[in-house]
Amino acid sequence: MKLLTEHTILEWLESVKDPEVPVLSILDLGIVRKVELINDPINPFWEITITPTYSGCPAMDVISTQIRMILFANGISNFRIKQVLSPAWTTDWMSDAGREKLKAYGIAPPQYSASGKDNSKVVCPNCGSADTTVISEFGSTACKALYRCENCLEPFDYFKCH
Ligand SMILES: [Zn+2]
Image (cartoon, rainbow, N blue to C red; front, top):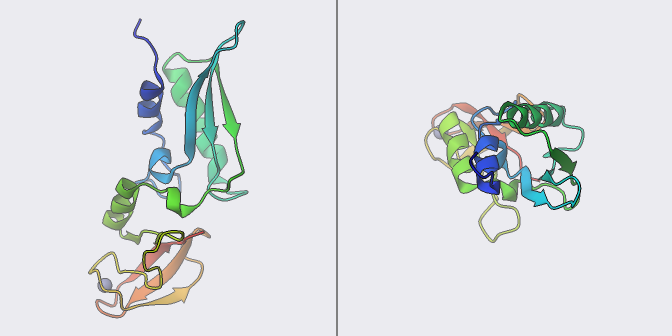
């Protein structure tokens, strides 16, 4: 039997997608904080630490269930899923690969909030113009805002920072 490593588990978890934005895996989103083998002398187990993107986000139940299913499917039953609420998830944890996938999907990725990058302008994912206007603070889901590009006139979703 192949030795199970943290890396292997992370590879499995890559196939768990955000139900609201199916192009993003939970690794892209930065929801999975840690995968660790806890060496309990009697009953060693894998601990998967996750931080929900939004408190009370119904997607988190779906995500936890999918994590369980993928581990069971790979013959792993000695695991626990630990939810950590603090520090709170922020869009800064989203990977650069995740941001590129969002853009390709037609959703403007969140700007970095903490870094020094200019976060005053949301860039249109269709044409790259920064001449954009917010139409509604609530887009197709509470996690997104609806924008319109003044250059190509296309409406688009913006994944909100927080
Ligand atoms: Zn545009």
